[in-house]
Image 1 (cartoon, one colour):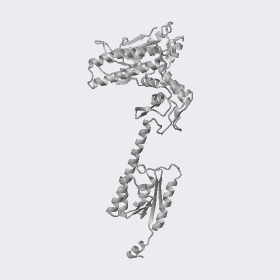
Image 2: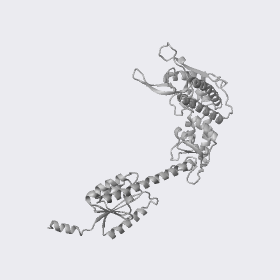
Image 3: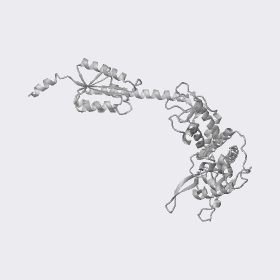
Image 4: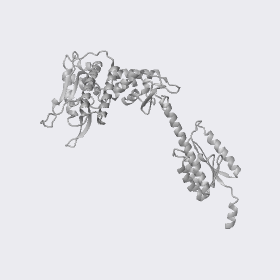
Length: 480
């Protein structure tokens, strides 16, 4: 049996068992070439030191600056904590650490075990003395500085490129081929965007346009069919008009060739963002007959829908004015729909219904919508000015009333220029108008209602019992 002194003498002649750690943040070749080169140079250093390589741990295409999981580094730390190695070899200290917090964990593991760290480029790390640990911490701090400085330069470059309207990468933009610089049009997709803008301004809904795209075999850049939501996102892009944006702000001309002119694009944006535009183009995902269609008798804004819990514990859908407050309407959806459906069937059963409608006329829809968007924006600015105390309530009320009158006139011109819904004639010509109306989709019912009349929900007069009054649903027929 060996005595303690014999063991001590024996250990002084033992070969240091070491682990090599190699890491690359980005492996653009995808073959691990640079990691293999690091290992090769570390093995040469091990031979020069007389160390025996027991383990090789690698993390290829993994960053050390983001805190992402590094399986190879984790395995290295486990080998250190199990006393399986006496030394660590790396190509440079920044291959091991780029975050000071990670270095502290490494120091805590190596210091009590006397682990020696050697690097090909930066030489040895003396972790056994305060000065050596200070050097290690300094190297880690500079590595972190380099990471943050590089990120700042990259961010600035991205910002400048974005403000110039250059392609910043990511998934392809529908309508263009972004694999070349500058991007070029994908003609089929560009034609679809152009046609969609025209159709939308002519009164067609997003859902109907999306259905047309899907039927033609068009798909999003990830292969998914279009919905009203994804189509809306496509049509709102400023680059459709050749305008560059950065973080939502317009910055000038884009490198993307324009698909539609700026005036038409701004008209589309105004239409899609208007909170009070009537008709089926207002809410293409409307679940109820009158939401986004009927108006509040108090202020003229369109109503939305919400769920209300009644005293009997039941949840019911209610049409509410989007402007909340005293006097603004709220009616149970089922009651209001029942009245409107009954009146519509009665009207559609009359032989003169089509004769009373206004024939579509040719007008500048894009120009009208642009005017409507401008007025809506001015009304919003006026409300902000009142909130800031820049105008009085009287001034705001008077100016808003005047602009509302102008806006109503523009919307009426747009309505008369919108083609009549195709479903209208099929219901009118049916032998049983009630059955035909029941078979019509919700979207087509809403289109027919908007073509034939304007629905206004009135508040219940004072003194009446709080029961639904059919006369609170006012229907004004559109006539030639």
